[in-house]
Image 1 (cartoon, rainbow, N blue to C red):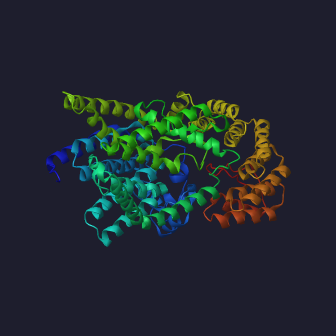
Image 2 (image 1 turned 180 degrees about the vertical axis):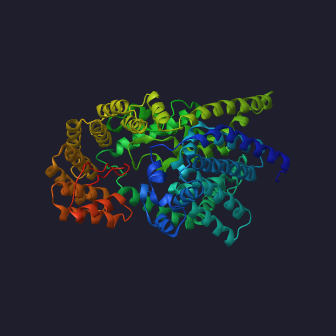
Image 3 (image 1 turned 90 degrees about the horizontal axis):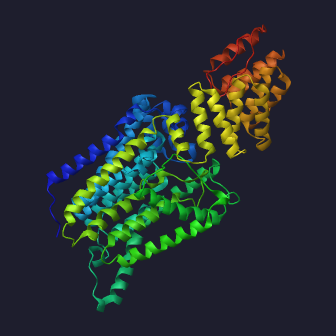
Length: 601
């Protein structure tokens, strides 16, 4: 029989959830963007900065920029640009509001299916304030996490309505929310599996075990056959969801493969991937209960991974799984929460290796809901029968939440800007060339070039093949007038990657500054061969040719730059002067990704 939960209690819990979440994340409105993906998602993305327009809408639905097809995420960023421009605080607050909405939805879904307001509220509170979730909320580029989870929870809400009163229109609503969620992030491919878990508990569609009752022993065989038949029926019920899930998986894989994000088996063999997955599963659990040394980037150990550690992690996972299976008849929420955690992590656990990281805090945003459910229902069950169980639980809950809120509040502070973010990453002891390099970029933006150079050199000490650090080091040295050393680094980059257009471009700029124009022209041409539609390269090649008195050829490249970017004012000026055939003045080249500094003639 369904229990009646007083409305004032529900509203009180929702108010508490909103207040605690806002307290933790309120200061993000004063944060800036960071130089880790925020550029390609927002600050350097012309389509996003254009706001909501027909052109940007078409781009959102046709691009796999950033190695994903997630048009809904792009549209949300465009809407923010429409509302806030490049005011980072507005973008961050949108993430916070989505996180608040997710927290409330999670509470209402659990309340609706279990009629347990305080347990549901505790699970939602853990979701709201856990430090592992800070990355998904405080990082503007992780909009896809909070937005896709909104539709994840709306899909579950619609599914509960369908289960209670099946109707074709209600099933269509499930499919609608599900597809919207995958258009925000393909992480939702595991949701049909989670719906099967919910069929078992708390929806109780399989029968007695979901209610914590042990079936009669005399009917064990018939009960098993019945559960099997129901399982097949419920599985077929999810088939319409599996079709878009499969399509989204293929699109995501192709996008990441095309974008070069997917790593080969030669770099990360199957055994290494499995070992990393096992260690990551256990590490995430460890950080759930002891959230220390959280950082923006956890480098993959690669071939040096500790196989003995992976073996122990695998053994622990097997033991826990068997224990939860054994406890399922009396405590089904333990098995459901555990399988939720294991299953929803599969797409991001590293079996398909994307990037150079071994794990990431943001990957736990949905999976830890399963762990929070197991804790919220499991702990009261463990205390049940103890004389002071309610008092103990009532005292432990606010204490635990206060600790988590404090940890999260400090963790949010690390996301204030790129310098605070990557300085913290290095303080955690991570040996990461990425952290050193991105910190160097941020320091250059602040004018602290000498310190940036030290971090670029440290990045190369860790990994001499890290091209981004080498190119940035070359750029910083060139800016200090140390052209010979800069050219040496560009030459080393080209030795490692001969078809790297930006290396040819930077090499040409340094050579042109030294007056070695013939060699500069050669590298500009090579950069154009690799990336023919780069207006800066055409413009700088035109400058070099004009300085060699090859004005006709120079004007051709200025025209090419203007054909690619009609608003390129410096190229317009250079073309006009070249056509007048009266060159004069400084001929220093345009710097990549800088305010145009094309010379006057």
